[in-house]
Each structure stands twice: as C-alpha cells, then as structure tokens.
Image 1 (spheres, rainbow, N blue to C red):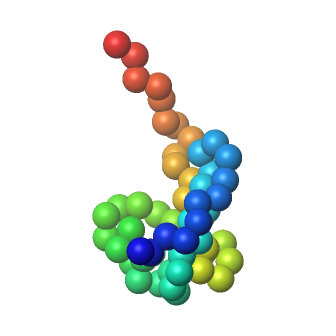
Image 2 (tube, rainbow, N blue to C red; image 1 turned 45 degrees about the horizontal axis):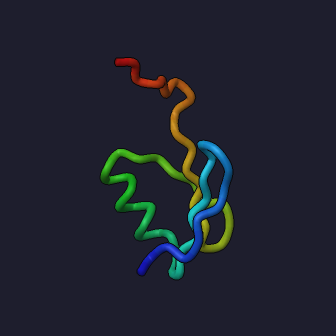
Amino acid sequence: MVIKEVRGIGLLIGLQLFKDQTEFIKKLTENKLLTIRAAENVIRILPPLNVKKKRN
C-alpha cells in the first residue's frame, strides 16, 4: 500500500503517502503527469484547467 489518505475537494487533490514521495513523483512524471510536493509525504495533483465535459 502506497497511499495513506486522499484529501481535497473538486479537482485539487492531495495524496498523503506512507513513504517519501520522491519515487512516487518520479513514476508519475514518467507517465507524463506533473505533480508537486505539498508537505512531508504529500503530493498535490491539479489537472489542467482546460478539461472539458465530453458531449454525446
């Protein structure tokens, strides 16, 4: 288990990890997802603001 807690409302999400976030951020970057450190063992994820609702 890697993720201890998911925090946030709406599109801004924080993930608190059990371990240091360095390796986790590296893996996310390899998969083209940019993240930022928010606190000790916490990663902040914010999707681009140009996300559109798909219409059928």
